[in-house]
Amino acid sequence: MNDNLANSIQFGRIAAMLPVKDIVRAHDFYANVLGFTKTFQNGDPVGFMILKRDKAELHLTLQKDHKAAPFNVIHMMVDDVDALYTICQRQGLRIIKGLRDKDYGLRAFVFEDADGNRIDVGQPI
Figure 1: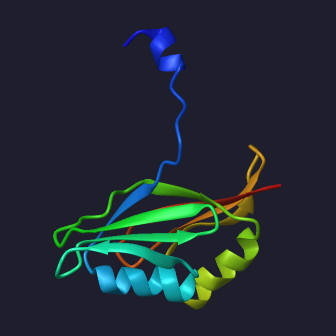
Figure 2: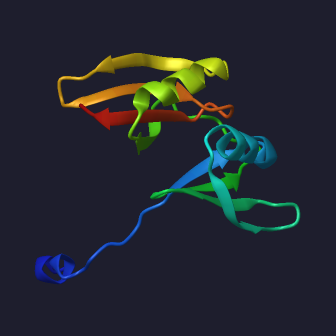
């Protein structure tokens, strides 16, 4: 692709596609615990769902044979990382990396959702 042509493109939103084994369970967590709202679903039974909250958007896709990756699949920025860390602890979620201030200017931690998807959460210091 021509560099000048590529530079002329403006990108809009990019939404994270999150594979899940149980889309109802995933919806319940992201909606009931984290406050996301379902804005779209497709299939019968449902195999795809869009969830939104504030500026964040998650696309859940049903993958019954999903095997979680051993690395972070989403980086989520929030305005109160301490509160989200507390919520994750109260929910009994596996914390991969504990909450701490990073030398690159974020206060951050990593948790796993019920499907083993690793989510890196940060807040600017």
